[in-house]
Image 1 (tube, rainbow, N blue to C red):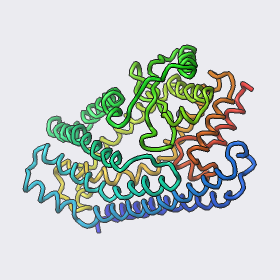
Image 2 (cartoon, rainbow, N blue to C red):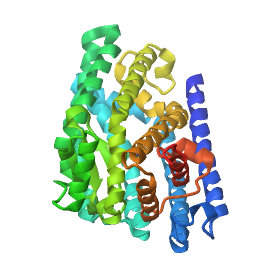
Image 3 (cartoon, helix red, strand yellow):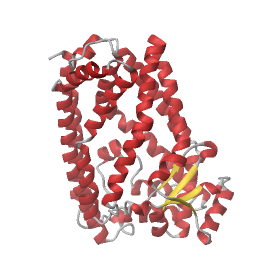
Length: 416
Ligand SMILES: [Zn+2]
């Protein structure tokens, strides 16, 4: 075995081990707190809901252990069976070396690799989520979603791949800088177009109906200088009883979306607090900051691919011949997760910091933290959130602080 192939095999094992240890720690922690609601959470959840949330967390942990095992087996088979260079040679013999043909190979490998995860997502929705009463997706909606996703990938992803391969041909050694500029431009364009063209393919968006809630939210928008026609309700109930709110777009394309499930679950003051939190993300410029971060990440990505594509050992480790950029793109996309996984605590730490800032903004805009705390408690209750994740587990995976952490930060604010 080539040294690089050995290194990759070791990294795959290491990542799987880390993920299983994290699941193990979290399960142990949840079981330790199972039973009676801990003192700190009295008022956030009643006994029956707490027991159900514990059960839900354990079931999700069990499910994700199977998912991890499956993903790892698929990756090992694809990398070490020799199927990739074998298929590549047949493909170029049939279709040649045009950018459209080469991108077609990349696209097809990606498509085939996503097949094993299809039954897993089906089971997750129609067994796991169903068992805990969250699922509202019909079979028809579920399958239509896959078809729409596929059509979008063919219409948007495939031409973008072709363009990147053409850029390599056109621009020579400095291609990675050009490719970075084009893909970054594409991402910005999608941020503007997605809320207008793509999200409506999956959900219905409606302005808030007339009434006291609308008046209240418009008044908040006025008070905080947030263009209020950008507040919309989405029919999240079409797929799940889980509730949420999110912020999309930037500049004058910004939009705050409230799930209809959220509107049903929360009182008016609580919804106002949630909206204030989302406005907080806008005011603190979290979206442009995230965009900047991902643009830097993408620049490093393309630089590394360009460097790897000049290294013989990178190709030879998995049976390819050096020369074409395509195997380098493919191998990089399969292997990069083995490295980026270790950065997830850092990325999530930044995300959690943003959440604290948006919470503080909301408490300030509402003149008190109580409405937001009320909203967060209900959200955790309705979504059966795990109130007691293991600290290392939440550091790795949680993009939002836990309920107790957010409550603590909110009540410790100098406002009180
Ligand atoms: Zn947030």
